[in-house]
Amino acid sequence: MFRRILRRKALFAFVGAFLMLAQAADAGHAMNYNVTQDTYVKSQYPDVSGYTYYGSATPLTSTTDIPSGYDVAQSTGTSPFADNPSDEEVVGSGTATARWVPFCASSNLGLTAKWETTMPATKPANTVGMVTIEAAGGLFTTEAFIVREGASNYKIEVPQMPNSSVCNSTTTGAMTLNLLGETADGSDVVRNPATAGTYTWSSTYTDDATPAGTHSDTTDVVITN
Image 1: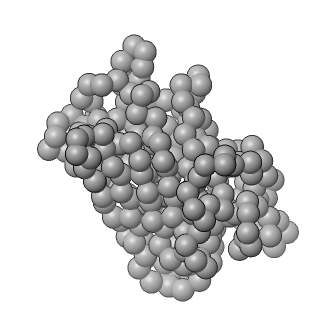
Image 2: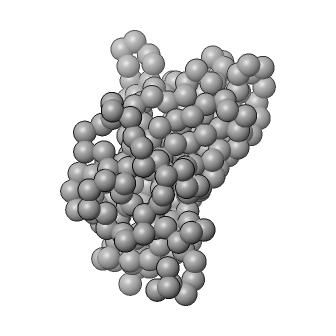
Image 3: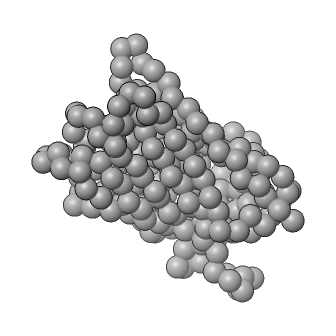
């Protein structure tokens, strides 16, 4: 904590794929995934904003591939950070727009992201951390698992999206989620790659159609010296 002059925060852009938030106005509207950061300087802890717009299908599962080179906090194994979030520590917030049950009225729904050190027995292989996304009013809680595929190589898996919380009617919806890279207590969450260059984030979800369809989108960020 003492090594920083500026408080640094970050957003898991992968978290844009944490939640099923809406269905599109028509089938012609495809998934749109976008990532921005407030600093692109290498090895820094940036504010990163992840935005996801979903197509007409209803997502059931999702995976977000974080570009190799980014470091992410861990609850198990050898973390790249000395200060990892503690259990139930708030690591972010966001807003989701959709037609929510039970009244099916389109509205903005507040979200709170919490780090969890206690994880369920059933989880993806190589899981090293978990974040829960809690909707205002207790409408739903979604589990997003941090999976380590190698050194500075992570992805986020959501085995079950909260599709039951969205009315089964066409509507335009979107979600922006902001997670702190450094929490109020000084815990670290995400760090930029140590090498300058272009890094591609990728988000994919499967839908509830028969047979199930797959929807993907990518977005680039440029890390500088």
